[in-house]
Amino acid sequence: MPIAIPADPAKTVFSPYQKGVLALLAFLQFTVILDFMIISPLGAMLMPTLGITPAQFGLVVSVYAFSAGISGLLAAGFADRYDRKKLLLLFYCGFVAGTLLCGVAHSYGFLLFARIITGVFAGVIGSTIFAIITDLFAFQLRGRVMGIIQTAFAASSVIGIPMGLYLSNRWGWNAPFMLIVAISVLVGAVMIRFLRPIDAHLALQQDRSPLRHFVHTFSTPRYLQGFATTALLATGGFLLMPYMSAFSVHNLGISLVRLPLVYMITGVSSIIAGPLIGRASDVYGKFLVFCLGCVATMIMVVIYTHLGLTPISVVILVNCLLYIGVISRMITASALISTVPQPADRGAYMSISSSIQQISGGFAAVLGGLIVTEGSGGTLQHYDVLGYVLVGSTLITLVMMYLISRRIAAPTTLSSVPA
Image (tube, rainbow, N blue to C red; front, side, top):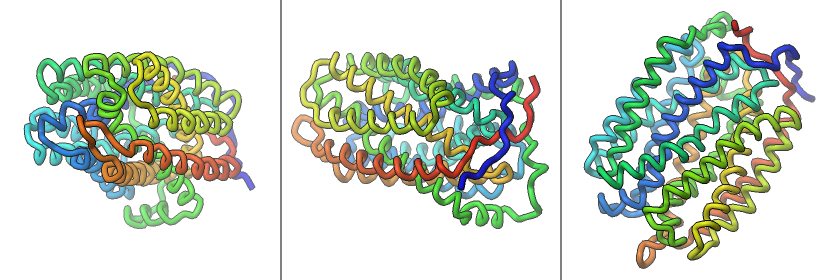
């Protein structure tokens, strides 16, 4: 039986303040995602420079995920006990410090250490952003909100990754991290100035310790279903993305010079598609759009992972369709899963959910590194196996998301947002 939470039909348009908050959160998310995504295209340069294997490179990706997951779990009990603005600002400062360490790293061991530090702080940022979104935006708006927030992935491809590749080709692979630090400092300054306190959830807190709050959230049966779905959703991206640049260069025959063009065009298509997908999910139903995204993802993953030497135009077309399928899943899944927790548990739920996503993604990255091997000339072997694993996990998430969509009716925001 669906859990009906009263919705406010009047909350179907954005107030000026909501528009400003949405723009700030989207740009903040852009910096965090870029820090993670920049590792993937740098793989083709970073592995020979530091003399590391695909398995070691997978560890560079996964330690970030594991540390982010652990920090999210540790912060879950406290996530609903503080003003979300202060919490977000604290962890964003730590994220900037970790990224700076990546910018000065010149050895495999120090880079691992820097990625751990960055992950510790980045792991809480994402969950706090989604808790703020759920607090301030009604369900009727969340498809559009998630569509804009999730275009941070696309924007990082269009702007950040090509620029990062250009900087790394000219000044070394460390240079993109210094760029992220510079941008993040500006974002943090705007956040301090513009964002209002977000503390309405504090009035809903019961007198329970952080440990009891964590245990309560982690053991609620309805929440467990959402956690399991989140874990499977993370599998696909962490399986394929860390190796996509190396696969494009060594298997598909795309040169390092032309690789930024692939990411740029793919990102532009995703930026255009993201808000349209979000609006369509609000109009036609979030689960329907999720299903279509899953089908598109499975088809394009199988095609992509079986490509050999391929003209760049075909690679770009396949990448565009694949990314559109992926962001369709991300946008609609985020909107649906945001309805699972009760208002008093949102911070803790989002922290645990983010941690599970990072940890499961970390295991997926390690698994990908064990499955994929490096052949002669740097070609990746068994990459198609990763595609089959992704298809299997996607089919399971379809069933699990269907169960979630049946249980939850449209909720409203935690409190009204001033104009």
